[in-house]
Image (cartoon, rainbow, N blue to C red; front, side, top):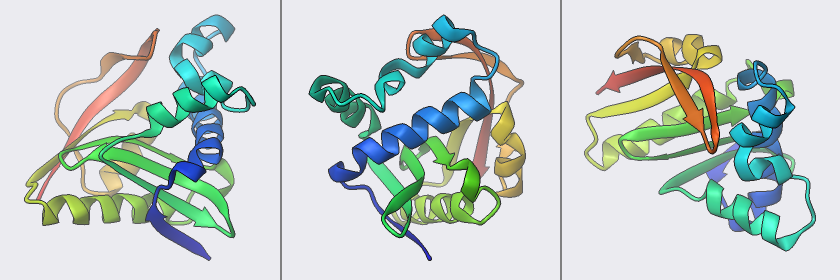
Length: 163
């Protein structure tokens, strides 16, 4: 059974690995090895045992809102953002199309609306555009070339949802 809950600092290692693996597989497949490292930033060290690497990952995960989807103690989804901006959403490939992303976004939207937000923006990767469209988000401009950490060239689609 999947539980949606608030992120805890003890989730950082699992969440970092989830982000690194999912981001690489579904959003950064265009990048060569060196560019991939630049695009992943500290998440390239998600499996590292070094305290410094883990502190960097904990720092990068922190956001005003961080929610996780958990299955029997395993982090299988994570959403980061602040009330007016959904920053990132990652769901483990084995859990795609099971409603986890939808549940994370719905909870984020509910909490945002409760705080008085009337519009949420997201810079969707091209892979995620169909998901956000199904969630009621609309394209707000054309596709843009984005950046991630020290890397460049990732295509993004700015989107928004009005409440």
